[in-house]
Image (cartoon, rainbow, N blue to C red; front, side):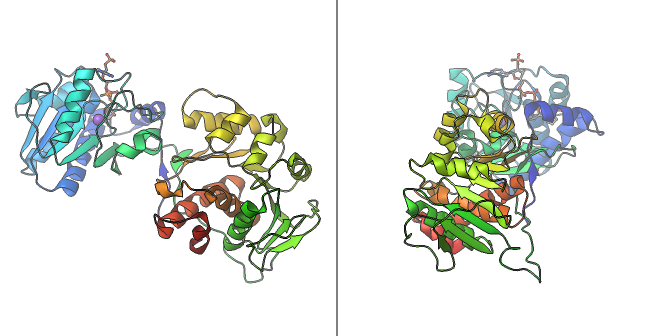
Length: 442
Ligand SMILES: NC(=O)C1=CN([C@@H]2O[C@H](COP(=O)(O)OP(=O)(O)OC[C@H]3O[C@@H](n4cnc5c(N)ncnc54)[C@H](OP(=O)(O)O)[C@@H]3O)[C@@H](O)[C@H]2O)[C@@H](O)CC1
Ligand SMILES: [K+]
């Protein structure tokens, strides 16, 4: 079972650290020990070079050096200068070995980057980031302590270039950058070292979903009716409706003015669109919609839950129009901007602002998909294969989420579950998959 792991912003991390009953010195001790242990497990007994910055990330490095030396590993330390924080100064004093200079130290098979973590405020000086890149290039394995030095922890932006790491050891909890583009692709394997903080769980990495059980007395309506509104290009809705049928909906119905090729025989095509039917568990509008804004208007006249995808998102026009609707929106970046405009802040900030402005659950898609709720909950998708970026996969996701919503899951939970299952289906389908192949893996 893959538990949802908490994700903490820099501010939330500082609060959690300050509230830790064990105190900050012990937290640093645990972070350094966790770094040493994870590195040993990953790299074995290879000689290591630890680069220490001036702050507490550097402090973790001095602790890790001591722990690695205690394990008999040949470890060297190189620093930018003397530590500037009290905690790091104390950690430096407990390291009994020599301290070289980052500018002229020689490389080692394992490079451990403890230059900067959550305290990074600007890009590294060019001479320093070039030094970091070249030492990483000359190592076999590069390990980042908490975050690669150069990454903004809250946004995932690269403030200066970073090497590709093999392992990143996050302390206490993941930070947004561990699951946001572009930083997430350069961190290698990401593990969390438990340092004993209590983490707020409103932001989290989406874990294995708990799907509703099928009751012994279930019938097709109680298992969830998804009503799809097909538009000008019904092939897209064929994918969505098939995905809904394969995601456990009891009954999938498609309103269409002409026959749709490629639908499973169990999916029913109907000529009219009676959306006041209380048995409808979720309406789906958008995939293949084309220029039929009246279908969105029709969906919005119904009080039933709805998933609004693709072209229908842009047609909403004003986010306030969704207030009072029980809606899930699934925009990619272009659709997001068309509806919500250019919002400031990180992708996480933007997703939350959009959820608040619309009152809807927002699935902000991309290589770093986020699911935001109006109440401030935020799910970060675990990494999914890059080959998901192909035509029609969004239609499949919309159908999956509609089915999970129709099965009675709350909107936010259904969206998170759909995103998680979609990523895992892509892993099973393999690199040459097309969207249709996902259906076999739902
Ligand atoms: N708090 C805790 O209890 C625990 C924290 N832990 C660890 O602490 C890390 C956070 O530590 P931190 O806050 O000291 O920040 P950190 O990332 O070391 O850097 C700050 C220093 O860098 C400097 N600086 C910044 N950018 C720069 C640049 N581009 N180029 C040059 N300098 C730059 C900045 O100087 P300033 O700009 O402020 O003058 C300041 O001196 C966290 O990631 C985790 O590893 C764990 O031990 C668990 C317990
Ligand atoms: K680091």
